[in-house]
Image 1 (cartoon, rainbow, N blue to C red):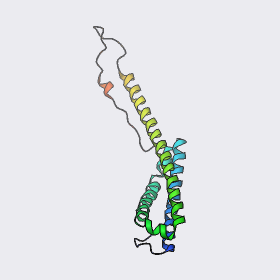
Image 2 (image 1 turned 90 degrees about the vertical axis):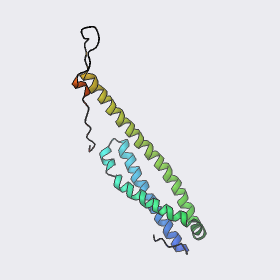
Image 3 (image 1 turned 45 degrees about the horizontal axis):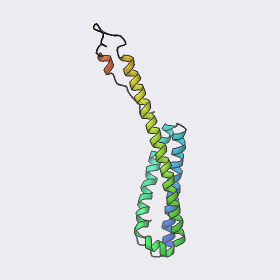
Image 4 (image 1 turned 120 degrees about the vertical axis):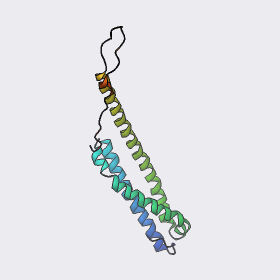
Length: 152
């Protein structure tokens, strides 16, 4: 949609239709991403990042146009503007669910990495007492880290 001011019902409906299509596209990508993350298919979900970003950027651009032209949209296409507002509210609910699922997956992944790091650290630590009954100081092996392959 161009940056020209809305001066007709057709232009108003065209902008609102584009917003509606963009909302549908963004919602579909988020729903797919949410389902994939819930199923544990993180690599497949990460492949959607570009499409999700593109749809979100387009939506943000259109949302700016809608805000600038709000009075004209209400004047020329009040019913379509109301429908877009309702769809926007539904998108926010979808976004909230998507963000909660992503936050949960991140938390689980961080917990797994911490558990593995603790297990690696415990396995390399001393399991006996020293000469005077104190645990010996950890050696060079205790300082080992772990490597994480983020491409998986």
